[in-house]
Structures are given as C-alpha cells and as structure tokens.
Image 1: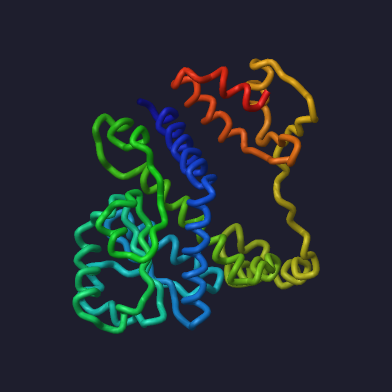
Image 2: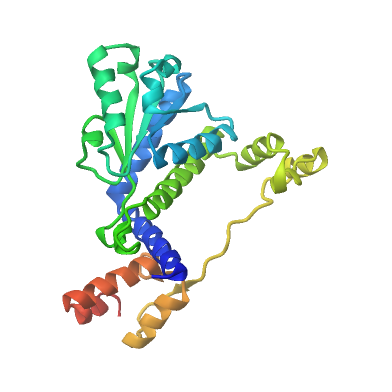
Length: 293
C-alpha cells in the first residue's frame, strides 16, 4: 500500500469518527464531559493531561493549544508523576488520561496509586480519552471520551502488519483539537472575537504573528463579524419532489448536506453515504431508498 492509499485511509478513519459523533447520545456524553472540565476551571483548577509514549506527544500538543488561549493546562508523564510531578496536581483539577488502548500499564499504575493513597488528588475529576470504552482505564475514570477507531482502520491492516501508531494518533490529535476549540468557546463565553484577539496577541511568531500587530488587533476588535464560517453546499428537497436512485446517489456525492421536508432536517451526506453502503452490504438497498425517495 503506497503513500496515497495510506493518506486516504487516514481521511476515511477521521470521517468514520465524525459519523460516530453524529450519534446524539455520544455527542451529549461529550458535552457533559466538557462541562465537567469547565466546572474544574471555574473553581480555579486546571486540566492535567496524562499520556505515555506517542500519546504523551499528543498530550503536549493539546496542552500547548489550550495554554495559547489562556486555559490553565499541564502535561503529566505517568512515570515522572511517580517521581514527584504529582506535586502540581490539586483537588480542583481535572485529570485527563489519554490512551488509545486504555491498557497502558504506566497510566494504570499511576491510577492505582492515586486510588490507594487517598491523597488530595483523589478528589480530582478523572476522564479517560480512549478508543476502548471497556478498557481498564475507562473503568477507573468517572467519564469516558471516545476516540473511535474501527477494526478496519487498525494500523496492521495498512502497514504490512506494522503496529506503529499512525491512524490512532491522527484520530486522538483530531478529537483533542476539536475539544480544545469547544472548550475555548465556553472559556470566552462564546465571544469569538475576544478569543481571537487574545490568541493573536500572545502569538507574535511565525505566520500567525504577521497579523498580531497592534493595528491589526485594533481592527479585529472592531470587526466582531470579520470571519464567516465556510458555506457548505446544501440541497433543499422540495415537498413532493422525487428522484431516481441514480439522481439521489449523485446528490450524495455533489452536496455536503441534504435538507428534507417537512421539518427541514439537514442531514450530512457523509452519513447518508455510510447508511447506503451498509444497506447495500445487508441487501436492503431498495428499502433504504424508499426512506428518502
């Protein structure tokens, strides 16, 4: 499997993760977890992200993202934690343990110590960020944030048996990046201009630094609606409008969303494409089409 094939399967794995979070229960669980983290922050605590191996590298990136927007966060390596670094953890903090398998022994050892010692960090809220809801890590935490990686997207399938984490780290970075952005919106009370000014003012280097001059920052502060979200292509189905199966499948490729009457429900086409694929494999394609045509 060559470079382009590998890149394509990374993209498919991310799309699969996005479909996972179109489930209302999963999305509600995620938002409840974010609210719990925000409760820690409002009480003067910080977010402490714990990871080992490649996950620790991901954790460091996540902490850098949060701190660039003024959100109190620290990274913690589980081995260094056992050698004194637990000293900066306080009862009001949230501990976020990141492990794709949920069975990383160094992290589990730290958790065993935390539970057995009965120290002040026993009061910390504990979150598992993992690809395995039934893992040992998830069982030790109050809340679990899933980083879904379907069996068909496991690394050995695309890397000639090599288990080096690539797709799994891509997924964890992506999910944690999205969490950072969601937390920052709440942190700045949905004042997105204030968030951008704060970030730019503290990021004078690199390409981003080119927009952090005092003149540009003043202009940005006066333009609360400066940035508009990208416009996605939506096909609005008219009442009593009909399609052939070929026309409908063409729409799923051409548009980003389809809006159905009578309640004007907007459905992402990637979700409809996945439904269609499953229906075809199950031999229920005609029944699936009748739901929409």
